[in-house]
Length: 360
Image (cartoon, rainbow, N blue to C red; front, side, top):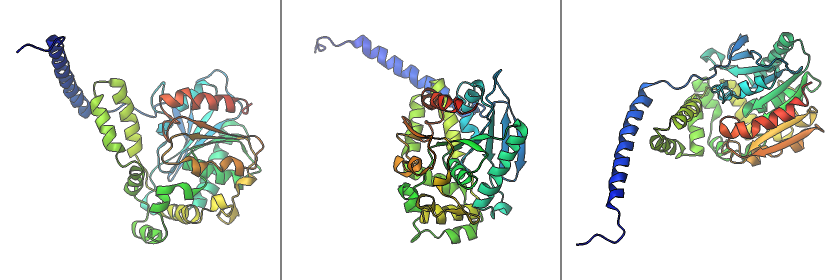
């Protein structure tokens, strides 16, 4: 029997050899992956300026010969660790800000201990953030401070800014910050008051377990973790892909528990009653209305954010009382907006351009 015309037997041999070599390389790289540690994260030089309970205030050491007058305080989300903004050299938002001449501080969080289950929303908004601001003022010698809030760190920053609307916050930047919690669809369904007994949960567990928080994130994209592992296996010989995967996977699974009373307030005031959106929010008896914020504000949202969809964030700029206000929608997701190659090209230059004009 004759072979089909134009059929290249040599190419079959080459393809088989290529697949065999790839399988061998994949196996070798797989062994390396499981036997090695991931890259060191959060390595930009810094000093612990203040630490108390679940809060840590860092000051990053300057990396530019000239520094803008107004310091910057980053307020991280209380469910996640701040190293997402300080991955590795060349991919660190913190490093980028320092090299651009900003004086950078970060309010980061650790897991609340069982005895800290009584921490309330007012502890974060009326104590932790104001105390951090005071420490930044003392350390920098400046009265004014710009604030950057990421995700729920943005919510806390909004609450702080609305209550302390006479200063010392000079500028406010929010990344992927929700205000209409009805539009956080899966979380809203998960916390439906008809089925979710938050009092029983917190009274039983003390703090909100991180496993429940992580599972709720996973439910937004049920197949994402499996797909990610398949992509890792397919690209196991690609050192840059593996490095990126390990960085983001470590951060995504490094979820913090939430203090019990604080989570109870989030559920009842924000998820159930949507008070921030409805202008009925109070913290420690003090009204927190977005219209009372008058400082310049930039809100960056992600086009493909599955955690904070645009419908949950889109009303922020219209409800803010500032005259100098801007929303920018950029390609990316909830995390890739602020970290990784996408952020380096899009968000970071935009923030530098916006904030540099308002930091002198």
